[in-house]
Image (cartoon, rainbow, N blue to C red; front, top):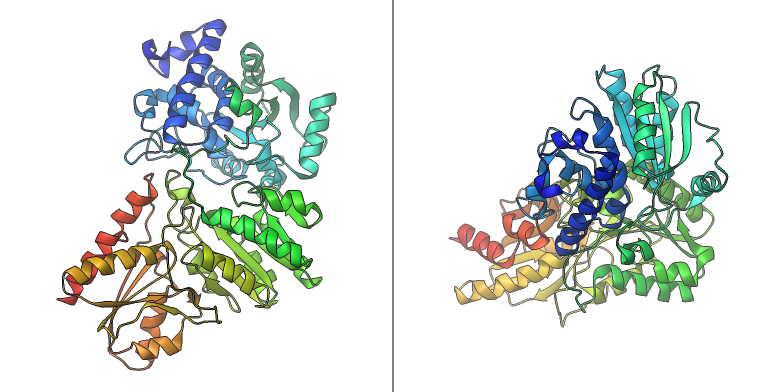
Length: 563
């Protein structure tokens, strides 16, 4: 049916029975290309029917819909005329896996983080939108405090908003906390949601298209705010995803590698540490699977905390754990940790509390586009007093720094990418606070400085440079803050090249530049960081190549500047 429809115009010409057939076609297309390219499969399969019903009842783009979280938008993208591009979902130059205003007039807000839709809708309604303003909100997003800040406002707004709660009992992992328990009660007994004063329709079958169409027409014709509680099954129509929705929440689309990732190393090591240290707590915000904490949660349930999609609470609650004499390890993706900026500053660093931030997805994150890149944590954490930042070069160094972090006794951040571990190093110098290590030392006139996975690219680049007659030393700047001033003094008369997979602000390069300037030195210092621009969908390797941080790009940068 999809092939013969002129979308979106033809949707309203279909019968309700034909809408059901359309939903089956959509599930086949979404499943085929998401398994191939990677993406958010289970959550999108769950909202196919309601996406069909929404497109049937409402008049987009005159009416406006905001997705929360934005990764529920696949069916909507196809229904708004993007079927020909869907084969290139999450590929360079292809469709973004989240709503993107630059991509289509049918996408109204670039939204990749949770709990934002009701605030956006509140502003649109207050700002005088002529059409209907609709939010499709996953129940997981209701664990985030921003939802309640917006709810407090929208219910006194005297402007109409249609709020659809997509209740599938899941975030990335299973939902947690009181809100989840209460929605479970509503599903069982059909009670109203007492803290929401609006026209509420509960327990709507999210896979019964005729019923959905009827309820949405009622909401459209209403003069006041309407809340629709729609119960869906995450992974609907694909048995593997129905049976294991966490596994199929987000998939890579690539063949499973046997190589260890940084997240796996972290997950294994934190269990080992907790067996020996009963003060260790592991804290996350709806990222149990993604951060590698499943084993910890099973072995130490009394010391594992998943607060739901509530990064601010995760951090400030961890300050309470620390004040009580415990040592919290807060495992959150880089892109989501930025939501807790004030909590880190006010509640952790200004109190100078022992708290270890384990920042997964640091650096480029392929496939998800600009809303999920982990490029900014060094910039904002580096501005905070009492904060130290470390980036390991490989799995062994990650294990070593996790061991070391137990005795830092102040705020400490460890950042690592969503990546397999590439480098195999013979050098593993014991960690000393604020000290770097030489990977290669030969008294060469040129020094390459890097850290993390980029360090291995620098090692490969050094081999290329040596073939061109350029000899280099290589330094692992594993401490980003503080930098190693002793080593900085040692190399001040050399040609220094710094390569880092984060934006320039508070980078090693900038700190060296400021240090040498204070000394009045005219140092031969060159830096290549990630430019502070939005980065669209591409693979991690493609993004590194575009930024000149692959081995070839590093070698070229050195060659061009050494002439």
